[in-house]
Amino acid sequence: MLDVARIRFVTAYFPQLQGLQALPWAAYCAVDLAWDLGWLSWLPRNAVLSASTYTVLGVALAWSVQRRIGQYYRRTYGSVTPDPAARRTGIAVIAIVGYLVLTGWLHRYPGLPDVGMLFVAGCLLWTAYAQRPFRSHFVVLAIGACLLAFVPLLAWPLLAVRVAYGLAFTLGLVIAGVGDHWLLARTLPGPSPLVHANAR
Image (tube, rainbow, N blue to C red):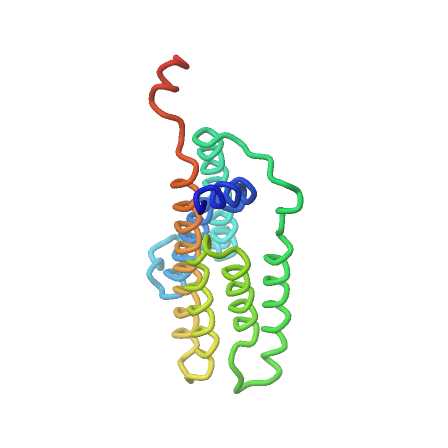
């Protein structure tokens, strides 16, 4: 019975479960963290190759790789038209906007935990609860976001805080992406070699 429910869930949320598309952005976050740590100081820098230029190039590369991974999903699993009622991108938008607003509010009141990150943790926990038991890895993300929210209270140097956030975002994207992909791959196996042989 669980397999039937899992198949229904995966087909309903198929576009959102193409988790490998998150990995290029995890790589981007890792490179950005390496930049902050000074590990990429060997890269040429001048009036043209500035930090902004490298940022644009990194975003363009991550977006390009994401598109290629999307093509892999279409070749391997085909395409699924989800139920319009299941296209719930609203919670992601609310989480992002809420995080930005609350983080900006936090700067006015130092000495508090990162309220924006606590809000993100709540959104992740709600997603894990609403889509249980299939996205239980979101509980791990929620716990990580909750712990990260208290980093500003530790009086760490600014660089250490940036490293903590950079690592958290990188690992969070990896956990979310791999977890979603694993759920999709074990539910909707790709075409068998016999299908490819007959296609030739």
